Each structure stands twice: as C-alpha cells, then as structure tokens.
Length: 211
Image (cartoon, rainbow, N blue to C red; front, side, top):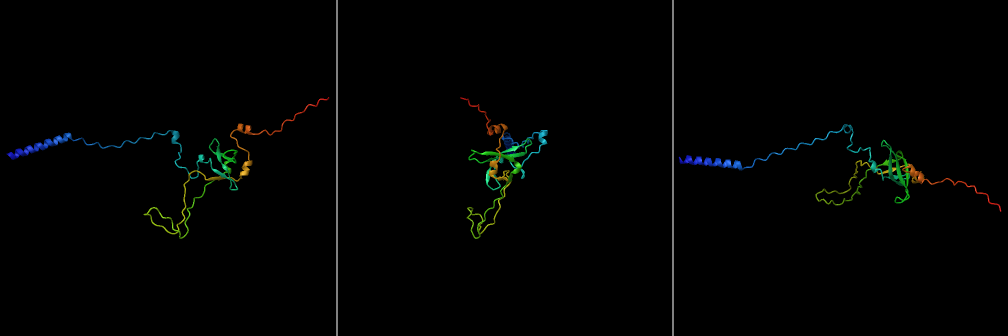
C-alpha cells in the first residue's frame, strides 16, 4: 500500500515539475524569412527602346581622352598635341585643333584640319626582355616558389582596349602647320585678330603757297 502511495506521489511531483518548466520556458525563436526583393521600376517606352552600352567596344574610343594626345608629323617629329575636337550636330567628328609651337602655352598657334587627316596609333604590346643564356634569374623572395635557372622564354604583355590612342600622326610637318592659317573659335575673334594690311589711303597734298 505504501509503495503505491509513494509511486503516485512521485508521479504527481514529476507532472507538476514538467508543467512549471513548460510555463517558464521561452517560446521558440521564429525562423527568419527572406525579405521580398524590391521590384525594379518599369522603364518608360523611350528607355525601353534604347540600346544601352555596357562595355566599350574594341573599335571605339573615348572622345574625352583625345585631348592631349601627342601628334607627330611625317618626319616623325612631334608637332604638338590635340587641344580640341570639333563635332557636328549629329555627333560626328569633323576636325581637330592642334596646338603648334610656343613654349609652356605662350606663343602657341592653333591649327585645325579635318579629322580624316589624322591617324590614331596604338603602340604594339611590350615584350618582356629575356635574360641571356646561362644567366641565373634573380632569387625569388618567396622560399616556397620553384627555383628557375637558365634563360627564360620571352613573354608578351597583352593589354585590353582602354579607349585611348597612344599617339597620332599626320602627313605634314611642323613647318607645314606653322605656315597654315590660324584657327579661331568665333568669327569675331578672327576679325579682331586679323591685322590691317591694307595700304594707307593716298592723300593729296595742297599746293604750296606762292610767295
């Protein structure tokens, strides 16, 4: 009899302890849910029909980088550099303005001619010089790198299109452009800068008075 009473009391104690723990235990954390992705705003019809460019094509260049490009003449002597690019209303390049002569911008003369007269040149990729046969390459600071001895093969450094020509050439010399007419950005500037070379008007002197 006592054994049954003891077992019943023990079961009641365990039940009450379980109920107390269940009441004091914190609720399980809610599983985080991914935030909904923001929808892109709808494009206007004009934007939807536009062919956007994402990468500079290899056959095109950056117009802003043309300014400052060195220009060389037919004798391979430097003439000057590109100061300005002239466009038409359709965005096509019509002419370039070259700064010729002068020193530190003083006495420089602007000359303009058609863009078609200009040839843009990209330098060939540079070749890494190969050490002479039998010469040991300098020690590699990385002790885990494999050791190399003797001559090494010549490697070519390839470069991607950066949209900037290395230089430009024309089939004229610096003397030719120095003799060319100067370029002005407005007709008013050209008129005010043109010297008056007309001969002075002849004046008829009155006859000398007779004594």
